Image (cartoon, rainbow, N blue to C red; front, side):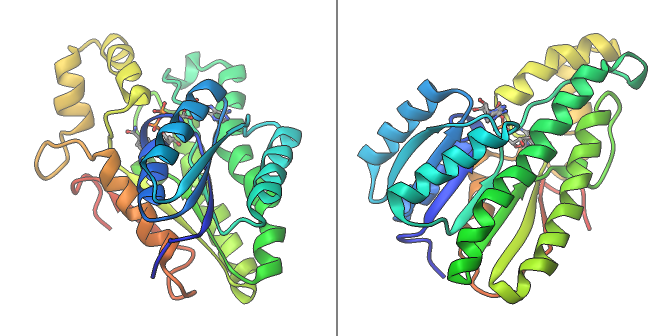
Amino acid sequence: MSINGKICIVTGAASGIGLAIAKLYVSQGAKVAIADLNIDAAQKAADDLSAMGPGSAIGIAMDVTDEAAVNAGVAKVVDTWGTVDVLVSNAGIQIVNPVENYKFSDWKKMLAIHLDGAFLTTQACLPHMYAQKSGAIIFMGSVHSKVASPLKSAYVTAKHGLLGLARTIAKEGGAKGVRANVICPGFVRTPLVDKQIPEQAKELGISEDEVVKKVMLGETVDGEFTTVEDVANVALFLASFETNALTGQSMVVSHGWYME
Ligand code: NAD
């Protein structure tokens, strides 16, 4: 089981969890396309990771909700390196609001980034994976793929949806060597989470400290945040696992917040 020499696309990899996955993959000898809306940050990350080695990285400008941009980005990876072995569909954002105040435009934006993004990137990568009869697709779900929390209707809906998409791809791709799995992290201290601490404190009428200790970490076994490295290690395991024995699954990495 090795990712050495594998060609990988990680969306949303200019920051947070995606960046940690790209870094771990490059450290194991993979070639990684850092596909992100923020091309400057993606290019900087690619330069830094290529300098680190032993693998290499390129930055790709990609809005995962834009079919033409996704297809062009995946085509650029294939032009550069010949194929795609691993897709990590990770790009995501968070918008919190109670359902009665949730703007329809925000709802559509959330479903587009999390679900359209997963669908479009998968659709662009599958022909290359099917042609070589091997590939690994990983969706970044969440504990919110399994449970709901107030204020997060669109996020919870989208993250639950990824389980269905992964299971369908697992069934369609099984005979063609393509596996699909979902990682479900608990709270990880990234810009996505830092932004929502004051927002949740205001909406719930509690302090920021209470948001962290009670809302985010209250049900963990040890009051600890999951780290980007924890999630990256699971992403390495799922990308390098070689058989259909592990497909259509979701793996929760959350300090015991959610136990299956
Ligand atoms: P982050 O904000 O650090 O990084 C998200 C990245 O996605 C950014 O680089 C951003 O530019 C990019 N992005 C946003 N919209 C995009 C688009 N339309 N097209 C391409 N790129 C886009 O966030 P993160 O915490 O690292 O989150 C990564 C993923 O992990 C998300 O899917 C998120 O839902 C999931 N997740 C995060 C946590 C957590 O606690 N941080 C927990 C569970 C799941």
